[in-house]
Figure 1 (tube, rainbow, N blue to C red):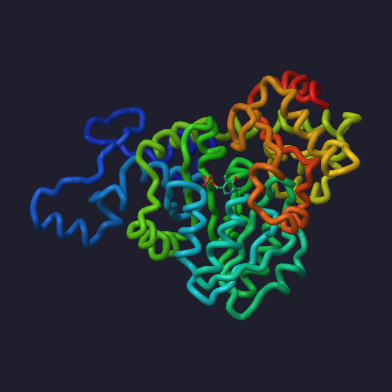
Figure 2: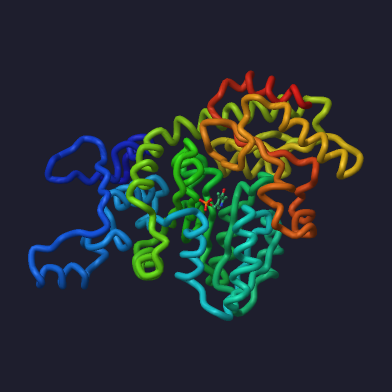
Length: 394
Ligand SMILES: *Cc1c(COP(=O)(O)O)cnc(C)c1O
C-alpha cells in the first residue's frame, strides 16, 4: 500500500494481505503452525523466519496485517505486536537495555509502567530516574554515562500533563539515548511522535486501537532495523506474542479510529468546559482548556485534547475529598466504574484507590494524585447525558 495516502484511507486499506481465496475482509488465521512441502522448504523457512510463516509465536498473517496497518498510521517503517501494552514496554526494554543501564522516564506514568520501572527492572540491574516531563532541564540533568533510554508518556495519566515531544527528543538525541513515546492516550490520530523525533512509539492497543473494550494488545513502531534486529528476536524467543484473534479485533477497531478519537475528544472538551464552571469542582485537567499549564504545547502538538479529563472535587481533608469523589462515582448510572481508557463508553475511576493504589504515597503525591481526583475517559455517549450523570453526585 502507498504510504503517502491520507490517514483515513490507510486506516481502512493498509495492511491487507489476501489469501488465494481473495476474501474481501481480513481473514482470521487461527493456526499455531504452518506446513511445509518438504524438509528442505522447512529448513529454508525456519532459517528466514521473519520472511515466512512458520509458527505463530514468530509470525502470523493476521498479526502481520495489524502490524503493517499500525506502522502505516504512525508513519514508521516497521511494527512488532505484543500481547499487551505492558509487554510492549517490557519488549522495548529487553531489546535496548541490559544490566547496569539507566533509564530516564517521565514520572507521571500509567500505574503498571511505574511499577515495572521501580520494582521489577531494579531486580535486573536497570535503574530509572523519574523526572517532571515538562521540565527540560530535569531530563538533561538526569542523564548519566550509562543512560540508554528516555521514556515519555504524553499526555500523562491521569493528570494529562503534556510534554514537548520535539524538545525532549532533541535532548535524547544529544545523549544518544533511544527515545520511546507511549502514544496510548493520543493514538496516531492525535499525534505522531515519530515525526517529532521519537525513535520508537509504544501502544497499549487495548485502549483506542480496539476502542471498544474487548481485547488486550500492544505494539512497538520504529525503524525496520530496531524492530527486526532488536525487538523481533526477543518477542520470538520470549513469547509475549499478540494472538491472531486479538489482532483481528484490533484491525476492525482501527478502521474507525479517527471517527472515534475525534468525536470522543470533542465530547471530552465539552464535559471539561462544563466541569470547569461547576461550583463543586475545584480544578479540571484537560490539555485543550486555556487553564491547562501546557495549553500552548498541546494546541501545537495535538490535533485535539484527547478523551481523558481529570478533575478534583472540593473537600477540606483527604477523608472529605475521598467521600466527595466516591459520591460522584456512586451517583453515576451511565458511566462505567472501570479503569479502561479509549472505550466508546465513558469510564470513571478514583486513581488514588484503584489504578495508582500500588504506587507509594510519596510517588502519588509527587504525581499530583490526591484523594479529590477523579479520571474520566469520555466515550461516544451524548455529552449532555454524561453531564447529567456526573451532576447527580456533584
Ligand atoms: C493501559 C496502558 C498501558 C498498559 O497497557 P495494557 O494493554 O493494559 O498492558 C500502558 N500505558 C498507558 C498509557 C496505558 O494507558
